[in-house]
Amino acid sequence: MSGSPTSDIGKKAIGYAGMLAALALVVVPVYFIFITSFKDRPDIFVSPATWWPPTWYPDNYSYVTQEIPYWDYLKNSAVITLVTGGIKFVLGVTSAYALVFLRFPFKKALFVLIIAALMVPNQITVISNYALMADMRNTFRGIILPLLGVAFGTFLMRNHFLSLPKEIVEAARMDGAGHLRLLFRVILPISIPTMVAFAVITLVNEWNEYLWPFLMSDNAAVAPLPVGLTLLQNTEQGVNWGPVMAATLLTALPMLIVFLILQRQMIKGLTSGAVKG
Image (cartoon, rainbow, N blue to C red; front, side):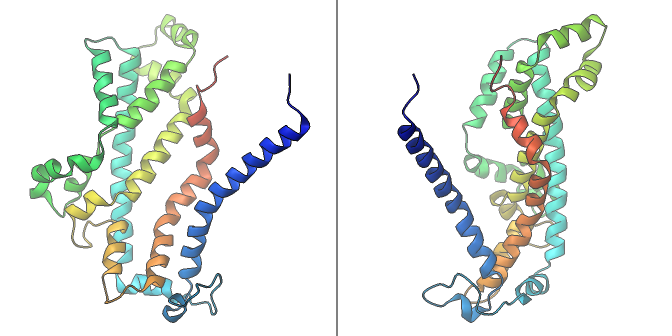
């Protein structure tokens, strides 16, 4: 028996209010970052804070590229993100395929270990990783190698592979498909949305990685953009928030573009297998 029209309206109102509150928590800080990036320094430290720049000051963006080697940091971020993301993507897909379609001893125990790895925060392993990689400071190798864990990607892709129709896999095997043919001709083509979700999440995480690159780099030769933001913040006495906010927007822009382009496939991939008829 359905509820009364009044109660339905009340539920919708509560739902919309919750969504608006969640949206405000995201939009308001981003808006302040945006307008601060176009404010001159005296206009930033006024009380009460203004919701609109008294005068637009776009020089903050040129200041960023002059004060720090921004383009070197951008190049380093691209190298670290693409190499790390690419390796993690390949390892995540292949390890998930092995856990679903191959038979080998202690497979369930191995998956339990992977789930356990998801429960361990990256910060806990920083000290041991640093002890192992200290000789590789200020090298891409030293930054990339400890970031190659793929517990999340293996978990995501394994659950997706388990949700695929068994009839398709059995039909491919009856046609004589080996593992490589099964993977590249059958499994991957019908797993594109989930792979896109995995790739986007991986790229965003690697692009925003800060703690480990900060420990392993102290110059523009290999340091990525998040580390460059810290160096920009420390270039003078008292933080000049205008250029810092401009650099923050420039840092976030590439991944925002990637997400906007692939958002439909990403959402479809994250929800695939959630409802099975």
